[in-house]
Amino acid sequence: MQAQMLAPAAALVAWSLLMLIWTALSRFPALSKVGIDLKKAEPGGRGQDLEGQLPANVNWKSHNFTHLMEQPTIFYPTVIIIAMMGASAGDVTAAWIYVGLRVVHSLWQSLVNTVSVRFMIFFLSTCALIYLAYSAISLTLLFEPGAAL
Image (cartoon, rainbow, N blue to C red; front, side, top):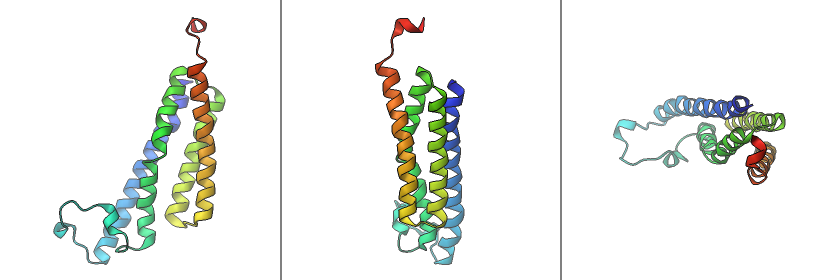
């Protein structure tokens, strides 16, 4: 069940890269529209510097990409721990639920961005992550080396 446990992490990596591409594809035309020439930009500029200069719906995609670089960073090692220790079907299901909800969260934040709905999606995905963290802790704290033989 190792591969099945790692598949959701691989899918979330791919989704994160798609969000990066979507961010770029929406930002570059928006930059041109507001008259920002990247060739003339000062060194050291960051994405946050564009807040207030680009339309909010363009920045939403960037905000979501940033979110995908935050909480999922604890999802990845949790999934690896569970895969190494022996995933159950429930663990795999919870990992896919987490990834599915993160994709829904991305789409909602990038297209609609009603905060109350976005928070509920985030909360539900966090519940799946809590389950996975509990599973990782249980698998490691309760591991008996002799029982694996």
